[in-house]
Structures are given as structure tokens and as C-alpha cells.
Length: 281
Image 1 (cartoon, rainbow, N blue to C red):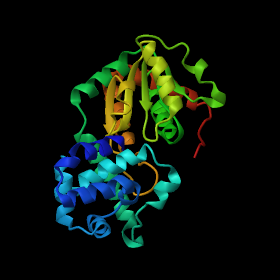
Image 2: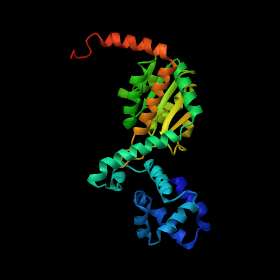
Image 3: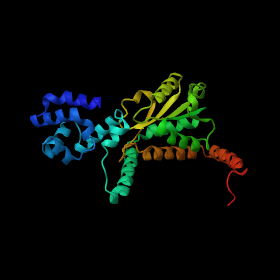
Image 4: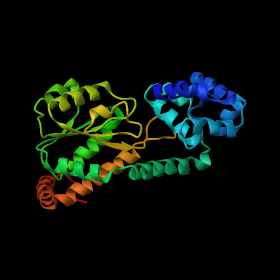
């Protein structure tokens, strides 16, 4: 949010009278307008929709929608869940299912379009060759980190999920050393414990692969390779459809790169599961 407000201040003297009115309103009401339509915002400020579009372009955005998404992204790092819920837009029951699916489809497509192939190949190489792979995700992100750990441990050895159960995380990471890799999921609002762990690991020479949001300037220093993901949601919590899809890609790519090793470990895993793990139906 501070970057957006700083841009307003930097451009303020160059704004027209109408644009200054918009800037003044946004400075005081960012939380309220983060989910307003263009028409709703124009009505609130009592200016034309064209004026707001010109204002957003004066700030370097392609239009109102891009400016609004930037405001939403910044707010996610600052605003608590009750405030997010209060500002949530309500969708008609007859379109909610479609709207929700289309939102996740857009997130996946946008995430796919913003990936750097060189970074992805570097990630695959690091994960394939690291002596140990640590996987980190706190609170909501833990679900994705658990998923990746369960899949990755089936096709390579020495995968360690950082769970921090009973605050045991110092012991979970104390053996990490240079050459190891940590795959971390870090999304707004950023977990202080996660950043503490990542800082320590990085100081030990561990390479950090960071799944984070598209607007990652605040946490860029914690990762050696950044994998930006679109996490826009219709509701008060982030959508993790895109980082999950990107995780699935990495699992598939690593399986293909290390096919013989993957097959060997899967056979060992299957021999354990065949001891009566599944119902004989």
C-alpha cells in the first residue's frame, strides 16, 4: 500500500484538478474502494468513469482494473480478515459457481504466462540435485507445502517438511547446510515465523525457491528464485489454485528428469503400502 500512496504523492503536482480529487479520495479510502466497480467509484467521488481511467493511466496502469488489482494486492499485506470480509463483493447465486471457477482459471493462466523458463529449469535442477529438500508453508500455505512434500518424497529421498509442531522448528532445520534447497510458500499476510526460518536458512547457504504473490517486492530478498503466482480470490482468503498447479508441474518435471530414481522409490513405497495399508476392495 505504501508504494501506491508514494506514487500518488510523487505524481500529485502533475495531476489535473479532477485527478487531484481522485487522489485525495483514494488516499483516505483505499480499503473501501478496493472492490468497487469503476462505476461505483465514479459515483462515490462524483467524477466521470473516463476521468478515473485517465487517472489510472497517469499512474502508469493500463486502466482502472490494473490499478484496482494493485491496490487489492497491497491491501492483502496490511488488512485483517474481518476488514477483508467487510469489503467483499457479493456475487449472485446463479453465477457464483462460474465466477469462482473463472477466477481460478484466470489465476492459473496468468501465473503460467508470467513464469520464466530459465528459472523453472534452474528450480528443477536444484531440487533434483540437492542433498536435502526442505519444504515450508505456514497457516493456509501449509496445505500446499504438505501436498508437495507428500508427492516429492515419493520420487526422491531426503524431503523434509517443516511443520513447527510444538515450536520444534529449530530442530527441524538445524542440520540444513550449503547445497540444500528450501521450497517455501509465502503469501500475504506474510508469516513472521516463515521469514525468520528463511533468513536463517539463507545465511547457512541453503538455496530458497520462493512461491509468492505477483507483487513480491516486499519479500524478494528471502528467495534466490522467485515463482510468482496469481492468488486473487472472490472472498477474504487467497486462492491457491495457481501455486498448486505450478507445484504439480514441478512434480511432473522432476519425475521425468529422474525417471529411474522415481521408479525405484515408488516401488519401495508400494512395497510398504502393500503390507495392508489399503482396503482389499
